[in-house]
Amino acid sequence: MLIQNTYNYLVDTLRQRRQKLASLIDFPAILWSGNTNPRNFPANVFPFRASSHFLYFAGLPLPNAAIRLEAGKLELFMDDPKPSSALWHGEMPRSEEIAHKIGADAVKPMVELSVEGAATIAVQDAATWTQQSQLLDRLVLPQIQPTGIDLELAKAIVTVRLTHDEAALTELRKAAVVTVEAHKAGMAATTSAKIEAEVRSLMEAVIIAHNMTTSYNSIVTVHGEVLHSDRYHHSLQPGDLLLADVGAETEMGWAADVTRTWAVSGKFSSTQRDIYDVVLAAHDACIAKIRPGVEYEDIHLLACSVIASGLVDLGILKGNPEDLVEMDAHALFFPHGIGHLLGLDVHDMEDLGDLAGYEEKRERSDRFGLGYLRLNRPLRPGMLVTIEPGFYQVPAILNDANLRSKYHHVVNWERLSQFADVRGIRIEDDVLVTTEGSEVLTAALPNQASAVEDLVVC
Ligand code: GLY
Ligand code: MN
Image (cartoon, rainbow, N blue to C red):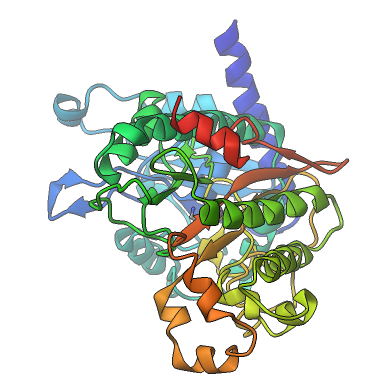
């Protein structure tokens, strides 16, 4: 009975998604899932990840398949596995079974894919975008902004995927629950770990044990100032902070994205605690402001001003916080945006450049304090966003001669030197915009400094 319900749920969800798309475009769309990528020789491949646009409308991560969507109908194109593949990969469901499971209106072999008049979106792997370009007889490249009907399709898909339906939210909540457990495991493991990799392995073990994967390369580092650090060999010293930005991705591809920062010893030093509380104040203030209609850029600017104000109180910055934000002085320590869309991709739909993140006719600012803002739209119910303020001492910023001279009069460098044990702190949660305000999907993971300390020394 349960299987029957689940099955209908998937079919119904996918039907509703393609009907929404059909109400926005009057031409066919073909979405390819993409292929596995070999690592050095063909029989050894990286884990397969279907294109998110395909996954959204097809529901299942099928390699080397395509769907044709037209007027609310779905045709599935895929080849049945060769008999020899059962030897290496086991028996796989046949295409008819898969078509039935996802409620396809027809299923055909790949050679019958007819592309005439169809729009598409470039898939990341070269073998597939080459195939897309050849079949469609136009250049379809992930690095270039789509044009013509491809652009119209991209905009329509953004409209549909920008807010999440119930089926998506069920998956996103699952990813959030497992991510919370992974962070708790990381905190509990730290005092007995010797290097970053040990903590990373125990966090990812929780994710893998739930038959999930990570939704991006985990960041688990004592060098929190390296925003996307991908090294795990550093030793853990008692005075260090450990920053862990780790998120799970469900089997169906839905992501979580969470960051916590804790003290390796379990107890923050007084300087670490001071900065931690500034970052947390920005985090809390931003989440309190989230509701439909609010501009995400204003949430970002709110974080900037809470951070600037906190740094003034600590004697690190000098001046009026609003003036400091206007002159981008906060970006010396908080150089990135307050967050991004979250869904099937950790930066949802970022394969489309800023088409999803930025409201039509808006462009990225070239301001030092705004240029890395990935989302600039009014919030709507059903959007899932991250809120991730931070404080970092990035040598490339703080030692930059131009920046030092521009901001010399607003930074108390001597006072800053007393905070040398704070290389990087970020606190990140996943926040759903609701009709009333917001719901933090990752709220089960404590973020108050003392509660984090308790989890580390438990
Ligand atoms: N979790 C990494 C990022 O948001 O960029
Ligand atoms: Mn993030």
